[in-house]
Length: 193
Image (tube, rainbow, N blue to C red; front, side, top):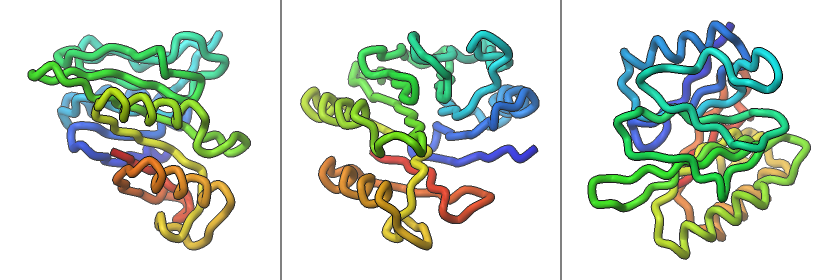
């Protein structure tokens, strides 16, 4: 199997696609002790049965998933020592949002968004989240598997979804870091903050 690891900003967060594999899930937990990250933004966790996430439970981490999901595509592992909680006001099937409080009682919204290729990009839930974060002056980090193509974002071509995502980034005034996937240079992993 291929274990894809994308180091995102801030440096204590990783973004990873487990490719729905049990072995990759186990490797994620084993690596958590070596890499000392505080949060892992996970795409395609291994689902054993009845839409239940398996093999990503650890005494070191809380597992955050949207509560009412049809199909779990994203989750966030947060180190238990962090002051964090799932923000279900914004979470949806393809959007997991965790609020993390720092020592000054300021809240960072840590978000993983899977932009399914058949759905609108970016999804309405992400627009709503960015608007709410801006109004409340909360810091926001969005990691995404965007399933888009745009030359400005590092792809070799541009598609309509890529135009839509770039428009979203510019309107939202977000900073961006992009990573291409290990299999295709057109598959973008996007971090917005």
